[in-house]
Image (cartoon, rainbow, N blue to C red; front, top):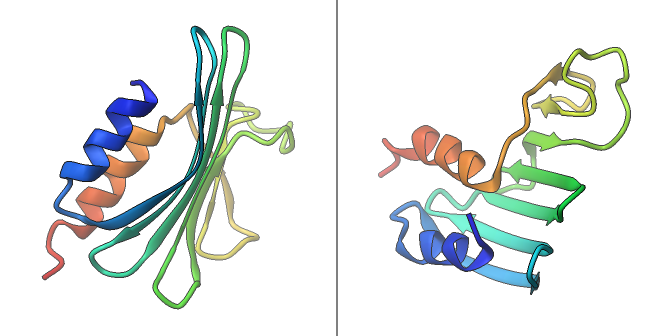
Length: 120
């Protein structure tokens, strides 16, 4: 999914209250997108995603309205003992780290959408 397609998804999503593009670069085979997204429950997602022909680096950090950590997916090169290295996620408490498959920004947004679907 291209950066423009992600922005269109955000514009049309019923769970997104607003979003800010902090940085966006897209060329032939290089893509970098940094966002701050606020959802209808006032939780926020901070994203960084860089993709080129060789690399795919990402960090997707979701926190509640009071800035309490909920979950973060990233592929920083640590936790070499994981079978999914370097892909992993941090849940609720920073010391709970689990294996994770490669995940895209769209998949993260769909995960959050599923969690917020009953929010009124």
